[in-house]
Length: 191
Image (cartoon, rainbow, N blue to C red; front, side, top):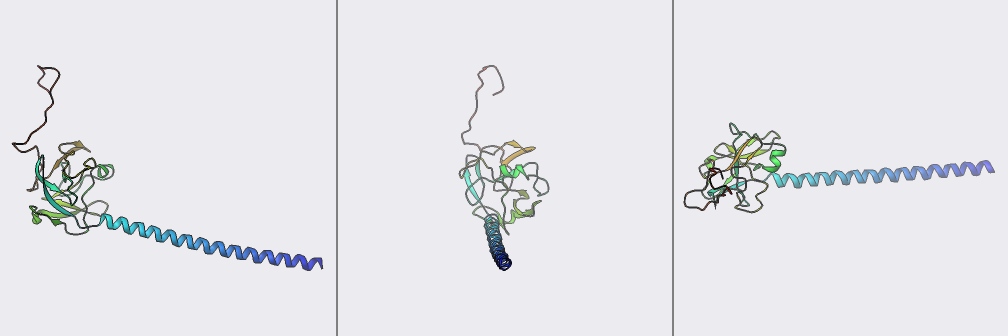
């Protein structure tokens, strides 16, 4: 009798373990499915955020009329870029984010659509170019119309705002005010 009870008890243990294993397998499969769904949703959101059609417009700033993106942020060219190809990637692209587009960019008022193109970046994305210059924004331009990147030397070359003709803006046009620094040494020729 004792032998029969022991066998029944072992059989119940096996059934309980199988049921627990089955529940665990179902739970793991469900978690995996949710993880994959979340990953795909996040990837889709990120892709749609970066793969939109870019618009380039003109805006009046202290540098004159310059190219800006759809949010009114200044667009820059990098003097190190050659033959319409970007020389800015990795940490450079974090400070100077490239203007990306899913397809042909749109020209706003005053912008010549014949000068707007795209170039393929090393990661496969399409970067907007104007007059063969890849275009970038600057991470420290927090508001529309700011030109904090103008004339900065970073990542091996200077950065310049871009004119309506597609050339670098070297200084503010005549008739605008400019700031100068004065030296505490009156006879020193350097500011």
